[in-house]
Each structure stands twice: as structure tokens, then as C-alpha cells.
Length: 171
Image 1: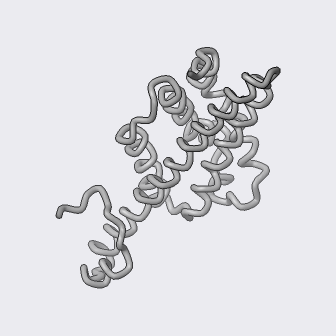
Image 2: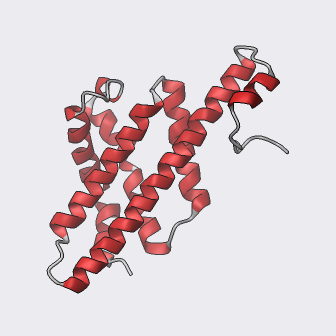
């Protein structure tokens, strides 16, 4: 069971976590597209991630809610022209912020607390890894759709290179 204080912190301090994430983004030379945004815009695009993480830690992983959230991030970033590698790296930094918080604010003082912290870190890692999976699906879905409708790429050619099962495809 995850500590109630930790669950509440991810929900109530979402903007503070997003501000720490923004600071990491500013230090990352790889995140050129993200670094064109203002501080407020960066904080704004990251704030929603932490309440969802809080809900996930509290109630368990809901793939449809988590998937929908991250698919939308992937679609939006593709439409905004972000490279997929930047989006995934930015999510990695959000994970770093949360794990650092656990290891500093909820520093294990006993073997039992250490085990508990490792379990929470594992759940957080699963959340963000699944997030990257769904971001990629959303991102590629937009690429697929644009290539099919705007670039007149044949369905046969798309099927050859896009083997993924996107959400919108009908069997």
C-alpha cells in the first residue's frame, strides 16, 4: 500500500513537481522544442501528469485512463512538431522528479520502509514506461493518418511500415 501522504502530495503539489521538471528541461540541451516554451507553458503541459500518477498509486493502474492521457500527449506533440525522442526524454525527466522526491522526502529509515519505497518506485516506473508506450502509439497514429490523408501514401505501403495496431483501426 502506498503512503497516503505521498498520494496526496502528487495530487496537491502537481505544480511544484512540474516546476522541478521545468528546471530539468531547461538544463537538457536535447529538448530544443520544449525549451522554446515559456516557463509557464512548460509547467502547464506537465502539471496534469502528477494527479494521474496519484490516482494510479491510489487505485491501481487503469490502462484506459492512463493510455488515453498519454496517447493524447503523443498526438499533440506530433501535431506540434516535436520529435518523438524529445517527448520520451521529457517523460523520463518527469519520472526522475518523482523518484527523487520519494528518495529524499520519503527516505527509507528502516529495511521495511526501504522495501516499501522500492515498491512505490517500481509502480512509478511502470506508470511512466506505460506512458511512453502510449505516447509512441499516439504519435505514430498521427503520422500514419497524415501520411495516408495528406501525403497520399498507399494503404499497402503504410501497412508495410506501420505494423502497430492503432486505436482507430477497424478490423
